[in-house]
Image (cartoon, rainbow, N blue to C red; front, side, top):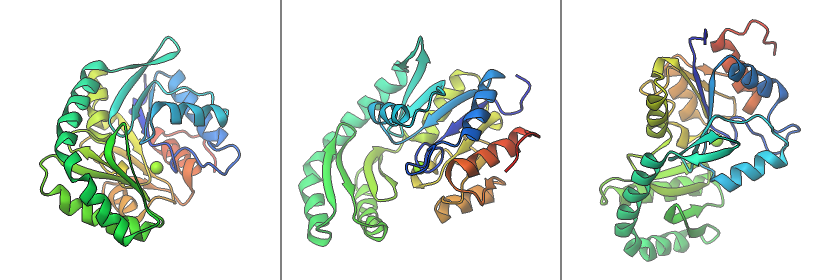
Length: 263
Ligand SMILES: [Mg+2]
């Protein structure tokens, strides 16, 4: 393809998708991505959601554009093949193994962690899912920040453990597997270099991919949190005045040099 950018890595919620808008992904952005794919560009949705949650949400929103690849739960890679998404087996197997070993160490501490949170934040929800032995949903962002700080301190005692947070939601993860390292694995396999990659995101869990190490062209919408906007600005990225998919469309169009784009 002739574009200097060969791959788009976009977060989903708050970046492409705004649940309460109609359509939740602006048509303009859908057309921009479709045109990019037709010219040979590759589009990856890089999200904290799992497969069923992402597929259901896209179907309900009547979004029919298809990502070429998915990075799910901030760490697992899937490829679009014959109308299905199939696993990037070697990476996902290594990812599962590393997490199983790490979470084996964490599990014994879950009662203590849960008690700490429950005592202070009675409206916080604590649960285990397939991806982490300890997850929380805080009542508000300020609570999430306090719990996050407590868990960060806990992580210092467990090698390779980190917290992945998106607003009031958080889970544990292995430091080697995140949106950035998964993007590097995927793009390396496609022989695409960081200077040929655009990444767009809005929250803390996007920071690992919003890094020159993995992507040169960075975009955040107006609803991105300040720490994300600062990181994007520092690396000469595009921080839009427009929210969610509108802002991301603006940034993608700017960096693709799409003269037809109009706000
Ligand atoms: Mg997001």
